[in-house]
Image (tube, rainbow, N blue to C red; front, top):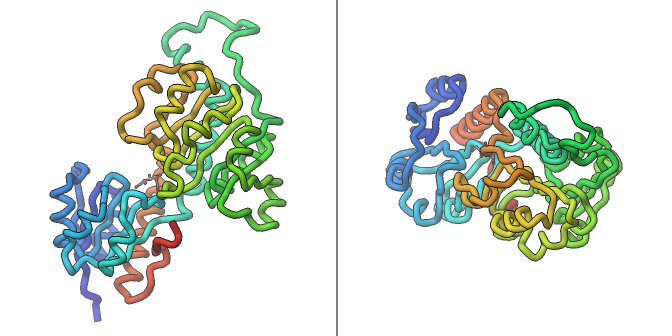
Length: 328
Ligand code: 8YV
């Protein structure tokens, strides 16, 4: 007997292959013109959907979740970070929340390594000079960057993405240091030749490049506070492909402007999509538009994860990527 198709409302445009499969499997409403949903449109979706397939651009706070109809049973997020969803409020109403871990790990680690290289070797600055027609010939002392090999990388958050970054960093000759709630297992630590710092403060003061790779939770909000940023060495680079809220962006911009740290590579921002205007004017920063997981392969795999989560829930099983507050 064919399963009844649940009403699934998708809040943003997803890759065609994903949308087609969702239409085959579910009673799916797509957002074909990709207009981000405002609060009232989201509330209307929560009042009708059995499953909401949402993204980071949908802020599902406790007030909005309180407006969900009793039929809403699953919020299947297209993305790994769930800091835009009040998971506790959802669970309290019997709504399961899922995400898409694993499939964007390698792509995000690739671009994090790219930002490290770009910031250390002034890649964007150099490219802009050429494009502006200002390259008038080689000189021995022009466009000097900093060598990566032999330097120390401090990874804040040694989960999947942190570990994938560590593997890449080793290949570039960087020594891997990390801060995490707890040390990684002995086998992984040995493979990555990684040094664990229980004290984030101590690691910050001793590493040359800092990369933020932890989730944004109440415990990691402004983890890199103004006080902690001051512990960095003047030649340090700060890289962030996780969430803007983890760094005090105003403090970081001020320090970069005053030359108190050497540079930054940022893909995410505290008040995204707004960016601190100071950052936009600085030559020593590389700024990307939240694109570290943006590959067509990754987006399709994220969609497949969303589908698997909905499908297993439909079949009465526990979805594989269920998020529970104690994991955050
Ligand atoms: C995604 C991300 O592109 O998955 C995440 O948490 O930050 C991004 O890389 C985005 O969240 C899609 O919703």
